[in-house]
Length: 497
Image 1 (cartoon, rainbow, N blue to C red):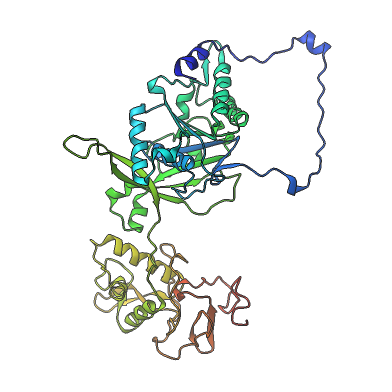
Image 2 (cartoon, rainbow, N blue to C red; image 1 turned 90 degrees about the vertical axis):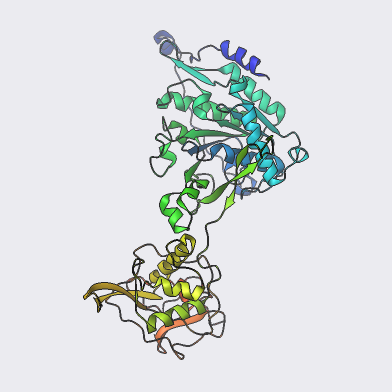
């Protein structure tokens, strides 16, 4: 159906008014309410949920995508759409059952701009017209494809555009659409976005479109205040009824200043990264981690004297793993340097302990080497939190004032296997403080090496603790009352096989 036909149905729409009973009718026609008994069913016979894309888009349900302006919603929606229509895992999500049919209905950008975004993504991913196979549909309100599911006036109240709802559902069924993405939601109606009753009715109408068309519905939505800190589902502008009606709420956040420092990324480059997470995942298992993405620039080659337009394309990104290529042997060498010298906790000090880490790993501790310093700080946070290094406060012999120095905690053992990168994280300020007895200098014979995969650490041959394969930097933090010899969950039988 073209834009003119949609507009005609919209103009012919009449207010939706539920039939009301007069007092006389109510007295003559009593209402009967009947509770439906639950019928026991074999759980193995229940129809499984139908996922369209990963565990985020489900048939017959709504998904909201919430973010600040220019955070990456549009290029992410294009990336998701291309993944679905090609059936390829482009952004970390599987496409159950193979390629899908996707309809992108944008109410902010014209078709030329949308084409630039789509073609840039196709160029980056090597997607051809044959790969899309006629399964992608794109409409723009700026080119006449008006989409107003409801209006609200003081005289008539909320009016649901029934002809449009019917036509939209019929078109989706006729085209076999698996997913419709509307961007943004606020432009798909002309109601009071702060009125919970009106927004609830509109959201429920969208849900019925999805259910009747057997498709997932995505509604892009802005947060209430741009730049107001961390965005969450409750940051969405207007009435909360929209969020309540959605089964999934994907939230986008740009990389913050602290995150950029942690990962050693230049502040101006941090704007190219954003992360997403489902802030209302009540239809799939919760996830404790965010999915990170990077925006890269792709030239369309449409220029006369230059490369032409450069468009943003989203691709998956993983934060750097501080423990990549870091072994137990590296820790042992750092501990030896710390034991034989004098090092401070402060990164501003000339004798910062990070210099020892940098020397052992062959990287730079210079303030200009932000990526290397971020790696060093991440490693030190873990070693502080897990007791490989400890911080003690004592008098500085040069400045004659109390300073925080670093000493050896739990010594690493020669011959232990390499560390497992990415495990164990200590937060800032997690360094153990004195009074805590420091261990003797690292030397041969401290503890006993486990013959199986793993290692032992301790302060003497009578106080050793077994841990699974990995660095002592990654050992569990002891809680009050734990002896350090308690079995580790999942490894109770370790060493007894």
